[in-house]
Image (tube, rainbow, N blue to C red; front, side, top):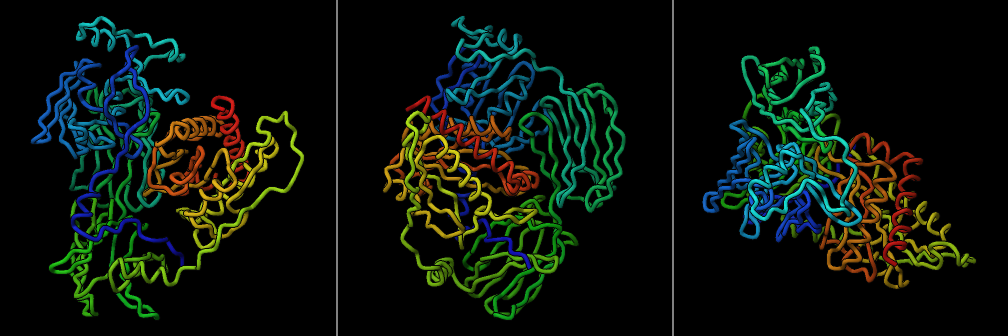
Length: 598
């Protein structure tokens, strides 16, 4: 029996559901250039790692014609090479009449429609780069694009050249995207990577009789035709590709049954296709402790969202990216407070399970039992469940200062006598996030990294204080006070990340945006760590909801050193040599911060 941890979403009212139906965004903290011109960026958002900017910026700085209707939410962006039409809140847009998917839907903020910058830059065939040390984001123009913007601008200040302090060595210009290969990666969602050098425009759709999914890549070349691949897994039979016309390469996925899918752009080019999870039988029983359980069969556990609805009372479980096999059904239960269970395909990407109730019930845990998934239910409200947990929770203990032993410190060392607190996240009864393949606990990854970082800091003359040095529980309320009590100069909290699915990977650093020093520290740590270990750079993110960052009296960061939900990265994070490299990269960040800012 393997536990999959607590359910990720509890939305216990219709109003709360409406509030959480859009992605949570935060203000971006950077300067922005298009070519040599700094953009007066009065508003921007960062949503799930995607930077959104007002469409007015495209009009004023990039020569676009923009038409918007805030009442209807309609949007049109016109460049010489494409016309994009879309709708606020809808990720599906049309580019020259062909449907495409934005990574983040257009949003209304600060009275303007915001669009994902990367998507627009990719369509224009431009480059988007970021100077981490100076927190400057810039678009590198082609000669054609610079000429176009100049023809639309009366100031005469538009130039292809970047300012001297932004002058990176870009020796090549973007060309026609090239399809290199199609790689079947497998897994429960039959992942496929379409290796395209560059950022292609594409259109995708499903066909039936027989069941197929088609992707048309437009404006793409290939070095050599790609042979048909016989796959024969649970979802995909084979993958075929051929030239459809002189501008289009068509990729066809022959499917065992019709199922929805998602297409995600990779940061450096290429597309990843993920088909839906497959859900089969569903049932109900009470275990030996009389806990009610709803079980279901699936090729992997999908994430699901939860709503408890009144009048009549229903518990709704929306399984994301999931296809229901064998059609809708209703199961009569008659075990108070549960009367019946209804299951249906609510949308192409959501399977909905509805529990008809006579009294409140909420899901509290999911277990993998003998090849099927079982949702453990609590008979009561969320408030009653939290009260139960509070009674059963271990008694909090006073934070224990793990003080360094007295030692002589060479005053010539770069960190001589600097007091630095190293905070290994989670611990004891709090495992943190749990790996999707190997089942590693976050707490067991971050502790050896933290101890090694502490050793390296001491080698460089620092006085290191730990919030924990072994597998013990430390309340998140006590971690910042430990740093405050010892008058630390820096606080570094080390964590590992997780996300739905298996695509997300890389390093990100969180900081409280109230103080500039936090931003500088986060930028420095992120830049040095990513550069040293060669991980995907997810950037720095402002957070105002983390106790360890909010209550610290010194520059503080929370570093997510990788994703245990990414199979390859989970294995890396368990490797002692990789943990050593992470610690060395973090040390480089600390040294650089003191060199540049102290």
